[in-house]
Length: 325
Ligand code: NAD
Figure (spheres, helix red, strand yellow):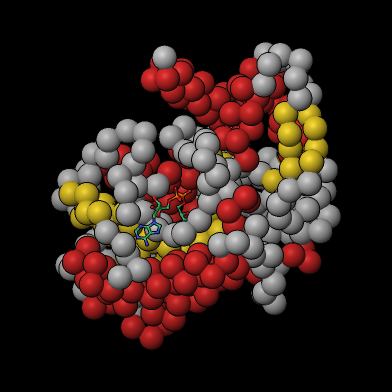
């Protein structure tokens, strides 16, 4: 039986990944500051600890796992990453986690390590036109990410690739583009656009407007969690190191995205655009490399994924209301 260590297993993608690995027959050790919020983890062991602490890391990564999945990061949605208020913490915390883990992977001769990078590594100057962003993998350099979060991801990509070059560590690096789905934060400040829009549309009275940050013309693409997990599996099974985009090419403006959620909810769309942290004007995954190397393409249309996500958040709201009553 193959063994896996999942770091960040209490978070959105990590908690889904643990379930996926268990279904694939892995023995899984999970670690995070916290357990998953929305459903129990099927991990064989779940260690709670702060991975910025080298001693905790040494206890968590103490043997030659076949696979290590490094997803732990100090992160959140645009309100967290782009406000500027968390820059020092997120650079410090995420870099420390990666410095600790990359070295331990070499010391314990792990089979392969997966590192979750981000579309936030791409330079601002290629993402000024909302209709035509360039996010091909090679365009990451010369580097100019729009957030410290993006700079840390770029640094850590280079860190893992350096260990690959100098110590023979087998690394696989994916740049995720806006992963969404059920069991992701949907309130409290770290939620991302898909879940935040579902919550706003759910809570607004029919005929009322929801607030959307920016002028609403900024574009993005969003990938459903099941497709993301399939992309990770394919990358881990392959000989291709990356970095490679794991995202969707179904680009949409944020106002059109909000209208889609109104349609799912069966409510009349009314949007009030207000100033707020928005990030770059346009961003879309470029899937030519992943298609060529792994033959992978997303299978969930955005609207289908959003229907499932909306339904899940609706269920969460009902549970919350019951608890208050
Ligand atoms: P998440 O915030 O839900 O999960 C990250 C987890 O890391 C959290 O559970 C958190 O508690 C844990 N963590 C943070 N600091 C820690 C510490 N010091 N010690 C132990 N655990 C710690 O985020 P996610 O959406 O599941 O993202 C997973 C990874 O994918 C992250 O590295 C993120 O940067 C990357 N990523 C995600 C997206 C996306 O759209 N969700 C996009 C690009 C990249």
